[in-house]
Length: 440
Image (cartoon, rainbow, N blue to C red):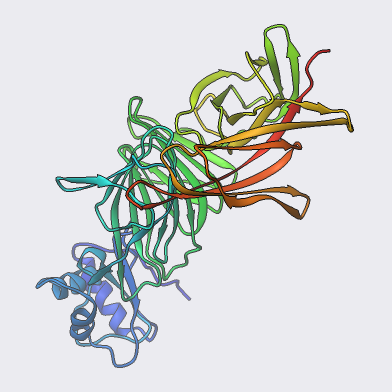
């Protein structure tokens, strides 16, 4: 028995294909169009093409487009079980929104057309909104039914498409990354879900449920896609076929829109030792062959708005000139020669304080900046295995919150407050606290 051909035939072969579909006892089909430009619909008993188009689509030529795309000789006869392809741009849509779930500053901007305003916590953003995150500021968005987006310092994005149609279970999302990096956590999507796409000026990445990062360097015009879970299809604008990038992998796309070889993501930076040396405090890293350099951001407070950044060779120790009992906070990432980054590691380092009644134990102090905030409330916890111990959970009546005498370990924090105009703000984060021993 010959297999049924499902190729989209052209020219004189179209009539033959249509005739064969009508004569066949099996449901007819055509090859699905390339990309995410169409929506699939399976014909049910009693369906009429005119009614389907009237119910789900807009545009005077929608009926003709569907008939032509699906090679329908007789639009009044639809076979039950047949899969029809409907042009996505002709679908009837309703808008969905993205809510600002966290925000760490009052300088982020929202641009819509000619208007610009300050981004605020709990804002509901719609399609075509452009967000600009200043240095030291970060935010996160929850898309209605469609996952979440993390916006680190320096990111500029356009919410190009936020909409839903009646035939797909999830909203259609298209994000344009104009500069910087974004982190995404997309709910698992199947064949009945709308596409979730991230575009840069040189590439497009499509997902069906995953956690991943996309970075775009506006100066070098290089795109990087890094996948933590699931699979991402990445394609340079100069390519016709996409590259499949799996969990723990990444790919760089150059300024010409060409994908480089898929790489394994580098391991996270791991501090092996913190030692006092004549020049200050030296950090020694665990070596990894794939890691070329380390990206280090440094600040004196956990919620600092302006972080000093530098890149250093991975094969050399790094020296911090000064370190006191008040911790210095670091954000660490390793990256490959191709520019792919690891997961970020957040640590806090201090010169440990010794107590006479605690031989062999060291403690540190940490600080939070509360300048210009109203009604700040700080929650800090320490994790040890599966046990979470509260350290502080209370309002703070000063311009700076100081927590003294912390033991090394893993900490999580959340700071909520109000701006001068009453708009809410929230920060949250975590860090590993490490204490070094000064030379006697």
